[in-house]
Image (cartoon, rainbow over all chains, first blue to last red):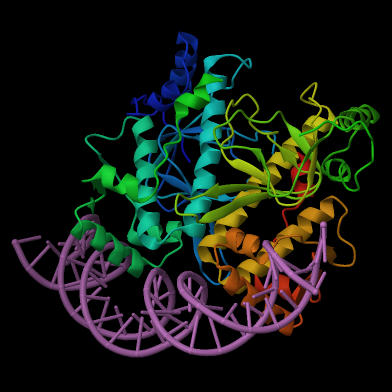
Length: 241
Length: 241
DNA sequence: CGACAAGTTGATGTTACTCAAAAGTGGTGG
DNA sequence: CCACCACTTTTGAGTAACATCAACTTGTCG
């Protein structure tokens, strides 16, 4: 964890918050200022540990992180992802201890999330929408793990990731970064890496999805969506309130 | 949904909030007042529908409700439970639309959750802790569905429910109400009701758990806890902040 | 008592896991 | 440039856990 004064504007980092609520010039300035003090984490490093003091509210500028739970016998479950533009700990600030371990899956850059001054500014609204989205991703993950086949889990998960990365403007022509190993994917979807491998091959052969060298490409998104009863989280509806 | 002026003090309804934070006399009076306007729901009725206007923040006085997601082909996944003393919609108020359907599993009584006047009163603290607990139950549910065997899922789930009902003082001598059908349990744990039945029988034969006529009784709680790496959610730690 | 939901049982099928090894990939230093 | 290493992906064969289907039994409540 080291501070870095160089202000490289991370692609997609604030695009997401701006997509969730109308941000004022002041809001954007506060974000720019916050982005000057960054913390970086190497891949595979823990960012916060379960039951250790929680992080101050932060924004992911670059990279993928995840919440993860490990079992005493080595089993591992990835509980959720933290993607560029998303918030860490924006929700329950005031809670002293982290409820889950958070680790970096790739090199990760964070910056502090500027405090929302009043209930009605744009940033506060963006944080609230972000938090509601985070909750809906958890529910979706539960439904996926509880009631979908391996094939459906993969399809549904990829569609969710595309939707989330699109908010940060990281999706171009249905292609987007997907830096996970098949083992991490297995720990996400409640499968073994062997089975993930076979299922991915099947999707490839069927011409629906390509995942190669850290990039995912959806060939037939409509087909995938039909298969899993795809329902986007509709940030617009959340914003309306 | 009908209002009922009779103030029958529901057992355990406020015990939980009082267990989560030190409540002042004012807090308790506000709760008593709120408990005068109740809404009741029959078993199997929807309390709120996904994407319909959200409920105002409410407290469960009696009965079990759940968040649920249904698939177009009839599959069903229970996403989480709302037990006596727990809050509905305390978290993201200001979000206009409900993110999940909530339905009553038994007859359910709700009352409005009194607004927390300032950030630092006892009620606000209790709501914040309740919300943090709710989040931790979601993470636990994900780990359960993703990485546990049927036997472990049942054991882990029962221990969680005991812990949650204990906060509302509904657990006596390791026995507590468990009104779910085996089919609802299956929809919770991502199994079929047939397999739930067989797994319950196995636990019964092994002398660990009895579930009969709406009551669960843990015979060997320590044994169960060892089996699933049981970690209580430690409301005390959350309160400390 | 009758009817309907819930629980139980048996036989069989399938999805996904396990174990083991081979082949591909990328980074490093000589 | 190549040799080497660790890691990831891929493949095969056998297995276990859980699902499916269908009947039968028990419990509950009018």
